[in-house]
Image (cartoon, rainbow, N blue to C red; front, side, top):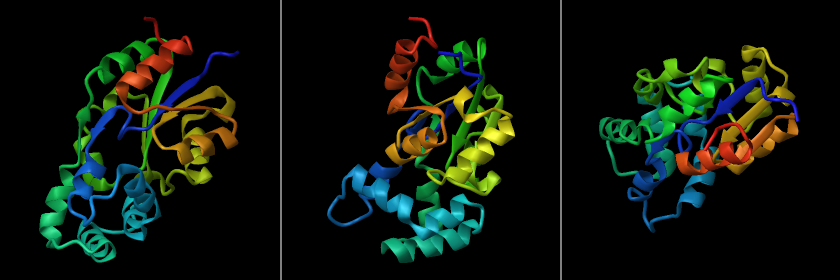
Length: 200
């Protein structure tokens, strides 16, 4: 099989520490599980508008609070929201730098302006850093992948994509990319080694 020209990564849940669903679940009655929250999050009109760059933070807070029935002020919610993502997870930087010695490396994230600002300290570790709020399309919509591939100047068949959300992985595969579902850096590194992209 031909070597990939681009290694494309999701951020939250793959390379970046992401406490969103755990923290959000504690704000909701009944303590819904992470998979239920993931599905509801991806269907949320408030989230979609914000992660497409179509709403300011204050608008997003008001819409999200109303949509999800949260008992928080807009300011309190935005402070909570900002704390949901951290930096690169342990082992992520080493893996990226090892890969970048052999491949072009990029990220494609469904992300808002608030979280993207928090990632500024490590986005330079990628050859291209793409976010839904900047490209105007979000996963799992195929248009997000088409724009990412065009921005990076590659055909889908030349891309290996890694994401923790099944719908995103399936969308990338439909377009012809090699795509893998991984959760966290441990699974990512194991998959990279199994595929021969990273030495043990």
